[in-house]
Length: 130
Image (tube, rainbow, N blue to C red):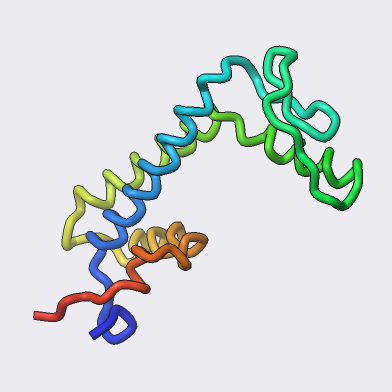
């Protein structure tokens, strides 16, 4: 029986989201190795005056710069702060256990929505029914 047949327990959503937070945290921490603030630099990202990465979209210089600007906004420190906030929410939900409010469960499900194609997404996995 799949999760579309029975409700997915809150614990499954919490575990899935914690694992994704851990994945993103590892990537953001690795990116902090390039110390300094990321800035768009033409079609690339610069850190401390060094080009960290070039960005070529195949759609021209303006599109390359727009993508570089978007990437520069993903500062590792900002990403880590965001992940800390998500972890605090997940801990709050975890502490409520089986008494998790339906509204908070809906928030968890919505946080997981952008990850719906992940093979471990609770809606993609089988849930054992007892």
